[in-house]
Length: 219
Image (cartoon, rainbow, N blue to C red; front, side, top):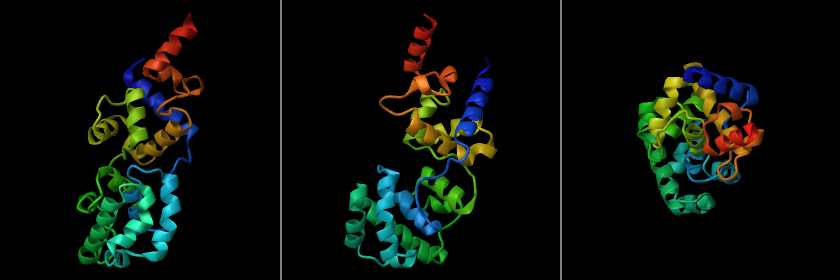
């Protein structure tokens, strides 16, 4: 089987298995999404969703968060981890949004990357989910792990993995592919004990454990 055919089949199966895959973070507007995405670094979406309601209640917009006492922000987001750095980044990002963008979260990759705490992954998430713009593919821990196991990229750096994925995934699928890989990573291709025997991608996968299972099935 040609490599292009293998990848095409992987994408087709993921599309069929997870047609409704979407972001797990709760938000109502670009500002809330920005806050949630910053807080999600090294933290589960479930935890972030427990923390953000109180954050949004206390600071409903960029202006209020920009004026906030850093200590108060820290207390609200403490359970998400790295809270001091996150609080500082959120306050400074909102200052920029208020001063430079009239309180509106910017909608271009270049402008978003100027905000403290926002790298390409976060910018891609905000652009797609808040503004329906697709400029790339967000690469989180699940996407990174599955890209390696499925042989979609040999790189370890998220930006390089993104570039590899953008070459092989049709642009029309860039917005959804991350969430399909994430769902598959959570349900089947888990970090410690992947359920290879139940995986619909079993015959197309390059993961070493899977290859051992393939050989045992043939024996």
